[in-house]
Length: 256
Image (cartoon, rainbow, N blue to C red; front, side):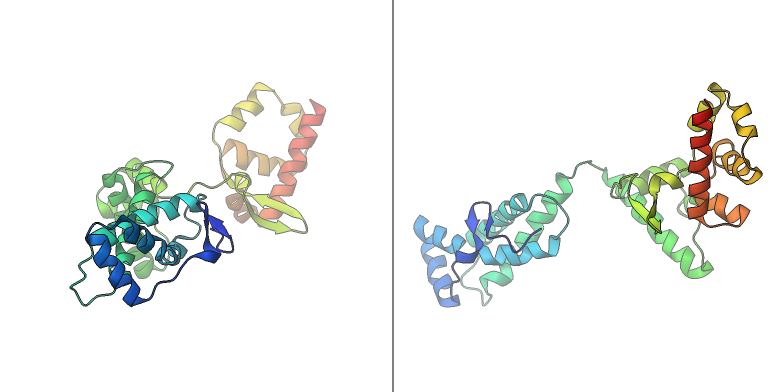
């Protein structure tokens, strides 16, 4: 969210009014007596409070306007339900309501709805994982996590993925002298590339490759290993595996 914006939801943030506590008290009494103008002035005089709460949710959504409007709903609820006889500031009462409205909006209107049971399983899995790492000083496998929480492996995988933010396959994870390594390069595949190699009958083209290139293609496309795993097995860097793999595939394609 950009807080240097001058305007949000049509409101010029640089011209927002700031009320004193005495002014807020007087306006609250009038608003609760049915004075609509006083209620409106009270809302406008506390919009900076909404903006301050929004800063806690930076990066959670692309639409700052939507969150601002949701926060204003929380502010209005606070104004309408505030008890002026209590020795509490309006802002103290309003902040939890504004924050609650925004959290509820982010929960209910996320791009993909996730069931409560699935989220609970994911949190149990994460707690089990953290506990395991603390005890064993290494990460557990999915099978070990599933055994710890008494759930099926497939259900644990689904639950963990449901609470993970999606990431582009073309997100760079490493760069060596301008040769970027992407998430796509680390994905193993037991079927698609193997079928591609079989269908195109590239045995003759593969024969022209160097032994190390043949080994990399075999481990990647016939054994389904990731580039990280291949690099560890043959004793070179992941970036080297990526370059050798791309070079070998390009030579095979050129011969076809």
